[in-house]
Amino acid sequence: MTTQALIEQHIEINPKIMMGKPVIKNTRITIELILEKLALGESFEAILDEHPRLEKEHIYAALAFAAFSLRGEILISTAA
Image 1: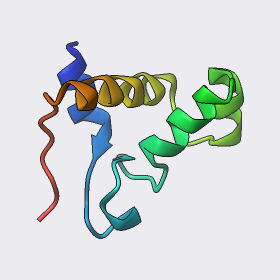
Image 2: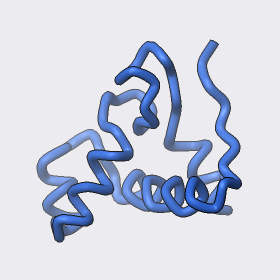
Image 3: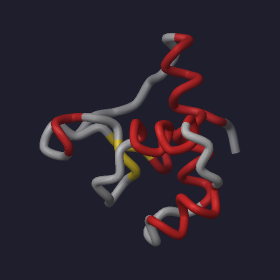
Image 4: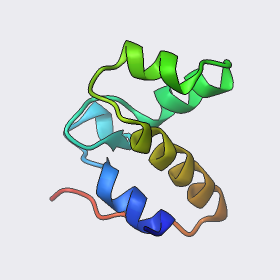
């Protein structure tokens, strides 16, 4: 699976959910929250324990989204 496919499979941007912030699909868990937790040194396991709806691939998708966003190469469809 490519990083772009990982992002498209797990992340959505919908103006009706969390004010249009990128989130893990079918949740209100923002990419920002996941990245902040990682930046503060929380382990994958701690994040997954705290948010049972998350899977390890979701965290990888959040990291991929951040990397692609910084490159300015991210293409993700938004909800209508």
